[in-house]
Image (tube, rainbow, N blue to C red):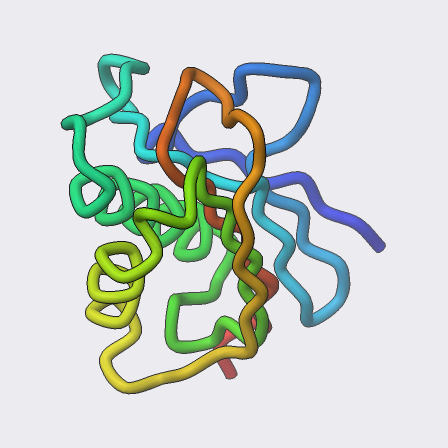
Length: 127
């Protein structure tokens, strides 16, 4: 059974999709960019600031679904340019407190709202 979950602690979707879907013990949040949940605008101009905000958004939707960053099993990370790879890795690594989910990371031509990164995760429920 699928459950659609929504929280006001993360940005509203900017398209026809859900913030997060729970399917059994798995949590599938929509990819998150560095958008402030209140203003709906990108935060900062650096990859570090936008990565940190994307993780705040992911934490909010995961919590609403009964999970957390410590329960993430896979991430897919999209960067606007691989020139930001090292700075992105530094900001990314601080978010998991030693937990290291499987990951794919690559550059794309463009991201929504001209963001510098988008992070997508798959997680499991807290037990």
